[in-house]
Length: 210
Image 1: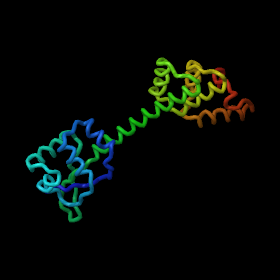
Image 2: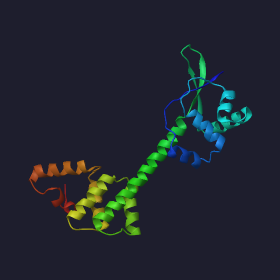
Image 3: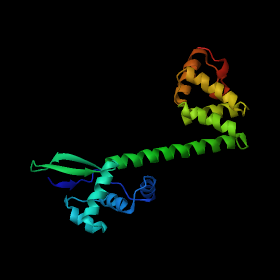
Image 4: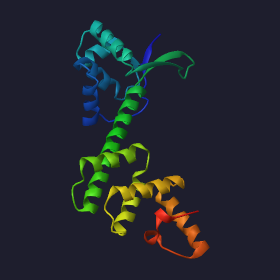
């Protein structure tokens, strides 16, 4: 049965791609073959042609190919071609998923750094290591960055620049099931309909009772 390479999804080879390959401890031949597969090919895979294109002997090409399979960076899927014949295609979807997960993790880490910088700007001083851990704890408890910054803004508006106050705000919002600042605004709007009082940053959340 012939093996056909199928380009399931275009992924541009860039520095992030290279870094991921290095993180996976790929040797040069594995990296070259993975890069070869990452390009658009519609022809049936010929191992001899593959070995020539990446400059390694055919026996070595088979070893490298099997190594990529064992590392689950590529998979082989069986499909029917247009003529109804069963063929096997090579898929890089696993590798692409790894790249996407790494990019999401990197983005999340960058967002963490941004939120810490915002706290320092609002407080007018560097945050302590303990404050860093508290903020990080909020993020790990799945408080959204939007909600944390909303609580920070609430505290700054009221002239309070300590995390204990912000933690109490977040606790009250969590009890009410708020996930976004839109939830906070809707709650205030409902209360204003009832008693026509207090704007967002004049509201005393710590004394709020349903």
